[in-house]
Image (cartoon, rainbow, N blue to C red; front, side, top):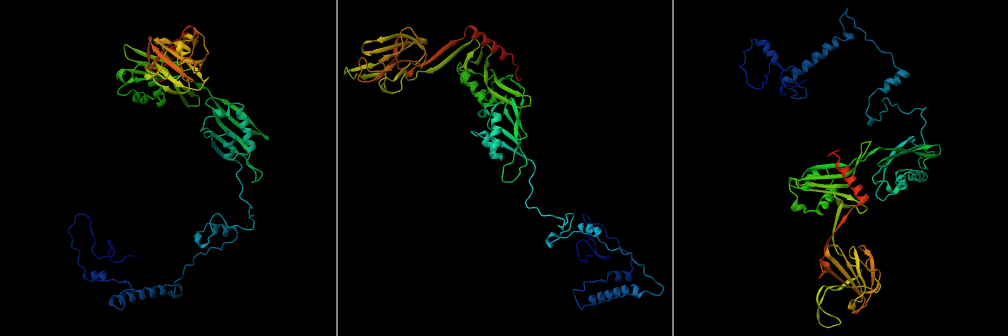
Length: 490
């Protein structure tokens, strides 16, 4: 029921609200008496305006309705009228009552125990503890520097099972070679009591990129199944235009950041990347890649670095134990500076100085490096021993000749460890620190000549060229041909 004053709802005879554009009212038919009766509020609110004329009219209406209801009740029916009896359901009992009660609805806040889940009865036996799951699925991740068995114990495997699993895996792959971040899937079984660890039922992991292993329980022990994974070792070749930036273009083509850095360093051994590389040049990168039959891909280091400049091509490939960059003709070039040939400190630099023994200003044509008597002296570069023996004020003296017109001398040695005419490698011991000749104490006098003229050893920058030959050159060219046969994007 609604009051006549409620918004949008009026009794008959009241005004109605319209939405939008108004319409012209239509004059109703004139019925003076019926209109007045409809305008009367016969059921006013008896809780308001008590004692007024409208209130008394409403009270009379209420009493009239109550009297009519009593007159029409079975006890007050007129003669000849008979009440129709209603059907009464039989009372519920037993299982029917329990089912009906179970489907009842009552607030839990009132302590209801209705619903399909019945309250406990005499047939329910309380449990001493919550039962455990028969199997538990877990996973462990091998962290950096983490031991394999410790990772299993941390995941919930017993120490005995963890050591047994580690021993089985170690028979196939060295545990230290398992990559960090490797996920280990574990299944733990039922245990006899809560005081002991669950037994290891199964273990699954990727031991290597090309090998997966599964450990399963067989009786009281564990057995391992090896599942080799087929690997495709076809290299990945990436080509593209240099454009505005060699680095950005190579990265946009898909080359990893470290590979692009190695590529630029390789080119820098043969040309100036900032000055000699143009936007129209084409870069050519070939790198290691492994593709597993299961879909995983693993990229490695760079194998080939190329740059096509139209009339000129740079083609470099890593080769040998030192992984040096060789060009397509089998030549390599090493650039660097001379390192100090003995462990010590520089006591006198290259240039004019007052001679400590002669007492007058004189040109010092090398470096004096102070070191304890008997300290080993190493060859600064690869070379040939031009002379080894006594040499006036230098005392025991060794002179080496190197490529590019360079030569180096080592004076005041206590003992010489090489002979004239022999070939020495950079870093090889050629003698020992002493104080022979015109010397005030144990030290090394080190001189360097370029085309016969003395130069400051610290200013020397050198380049050494090596050339492959024979079977090494044939193997090298076959490798280059194989790499160049790889299709871009393969």
